[in-house]
Length: 458
Image (tube, rainbow, N blue to C red; front, top):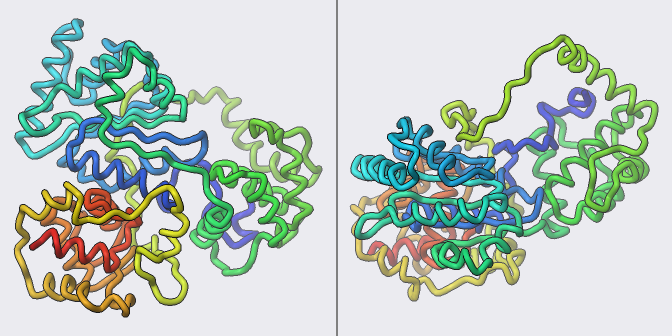
């Protein structure tokens, strides 16, 4: 509707999880790093929680787009309100097997055989359960049995529980204490701070705009951010409605008056999406767009249903990493003194990687040294005063990035293609290494991270 009028290539505030618009606050980075680390290190149970609309599904989708599908079989369950028996049937079907029996113990044995076969072929089975707060207690206790499927050293099935804060209350129940004790990696996604909320809106506008001009007035942004209270979905809904209303009024800039009108249309307690009123211009604009859809649906077209199963991961449209260029101002700073570390606040404290068990175990394996390895690792020693020479982050390209990707691959954190482009997969690998080494997980290969890589190599 308003794309051409405001100079957008696509809708900047759509509520569907599009990885092109991925915005990583410190807690989002922590959640993404927890998923990557927990799965790649075969920790078994991983739990990610967060309020409605903070971006849990966006993090999941972003992760799923980075995995090598030939080495990882991911089963995505988005409606877990089923019995354990039905749950097992779904798992087996998604793994391409027909249940040999309706008995739970026999289906678990069959699942064990399938996961063993994947393990021997160098693969891994990952079970992702979205909306996990809706799992019946009996089913969740049954899922705990799946964590017993293991070799002498590693878990065969990696289970990721993603849900609202009610999931934490569910896990705190006495009868589920064994499940709670099995969770090896936890993370919670927090609402955005005021500063992060402004950055989130700018990030989305920058990825969709043709013209670099202000679309929202400062007064409008202040009101929108205050109302949304750090929830990305609320920011999307308010900003999208403001653009619709602004288009209806033919106003090139979203003013405080327009933002106030849009916000008044929502029942802010509980943030219902139902409108109490709408201006004549905006109603006309909405009807013009909606009428063809209404006619289409009225013609008797059937809408496909949704089944309890994983999506076809092969149909997830690949995204271009090169579009996701990190936006920084001035000289890039050391991770320990970066804005990211400041924003993290009490959420995460940088630890001494020398005391980390993950870093110690990492030091036991060897990486073949190349001249480029030496170049990038040596740059981490004694030159921290010139951070522009020792920091790599999303959007960077060149031989140093290639060397970093090679080192990460050798450390067991595959960055995808070693193509010299610091894209989303490379950032995910850096996040996973930082998580295991006890560093602040921000996805930036700064002096501390490069030094930790060097120590792990020695």
